[in-house]
Structures are given as C-alpha cells and as structure tokens.
Image 1 (spheres, helix red, strand yellow):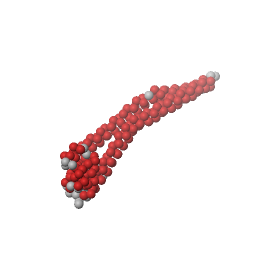
Image 2 (cartoon, one colour; image 1 turned 135 degrees about the vertical axis):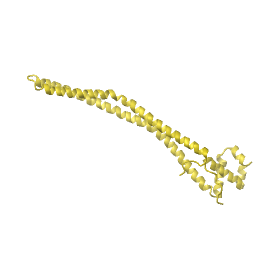
Image 3 (tube, rainbow, N blue to C red; image 1 turned 30 degrees about the vertical axis):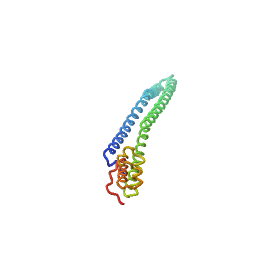
Image 4 (tube, rainbow, N blue to C red; image 1 turned 120 degrees about the horizontal axis):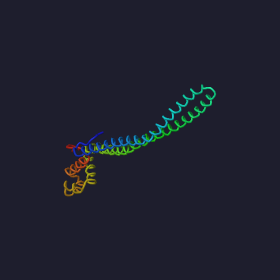
Length: 205
C-alpha cells in the first residue's frame, strides 16, 4: 500500500497532516495526564486522613494493651480504648474508600481526555489515508490500458475545475467523446496528478 504521494506538493500536504495528527495525539496524552493529576490531587486529604486514622487506631490498641494489665480499671480502660480504636479504624476504611473512588475517577477522566481526541483524529486520518491509497491503486491500474485512461479522463472532466480543463483543450468534453488520444492522455494525467501520482509516460494499448 502506498504511504505517500509521488509528487512533492501532495506528499508535503500528507506529511504535514500526519505531523498535525501526531501533535494532537501528544497534546491529548498530555491533557489526560494533567486531568488525572488534578483529580487525583483531590484524594490527597482523604489519604492523609486515612493514614492518620490508621495510626490513631494502632496507637489506641497499643495503649489499651499496655493499660489492660493495670489493676482494677485495666480491663475497663482497655475496652474503651479498643472501641475507640475500632471507630478510628472504621474512619480510616471510609477515608480509604473515598480515596480509591477519587483515584478511580481520576483514571477514568484522564483516559477519556486522552483517548477521545486520539481515537477521533487518528480514526479520521486512517480513513483518509486508506481511501487515498485505494484510489491511487485504482488509478495506477486504470492507467495501464487505453480504456482505463478514458475512465481517468472522464473522472477529470467530472472533478477538475473548468478553467483547468479548458487549458487542455477548447472543448475537452467533445474531444473526450471523440477519443482524441492527446486530450484523453492529458485528462488522465490531470487526474493522476490530482492524486499525487507520477505521470504515466507509456500505457499499454
């Protein structure tokens, strides 16, 4: 499959379009990273709270274990501290779940921000290049026969600007109908040039 046109002007436009597509991809990925970082930053307070609550629960349990050996009130104090530690642990779990939810949202939003433009732009560009490659292969095949050249010439009559056609012949449509070789060849070459294909110098008759 041809990747780029033979003629410099068309090839330059294709290269610039591909470069623009690449820039959009890079920009989209960078934007996705920025969005992810911004949303993930919201989870930082929840993370700090979860870590603090976890440390508090561990400290209360440790203290309760130490005081539990004290006479008379040891069991009572240990039970109170144990319940407080359980409450702190519950708060830590809730904060951790909130943190995880925010981080998941950050990942989803970051991916959407990056992928949507990439899929759209790259998809459109792939379709454009595939269609061009198919038309180019078809034009190369048609240019190999006299009948194919007449088809290319007819396409030129249908697609190219009138001023360009009149530069080839005073009445290009009549000349095409009459099968004038020089005009048919010029019209076919005009259609090839529009695709960026090099001029066919010899076709099989």
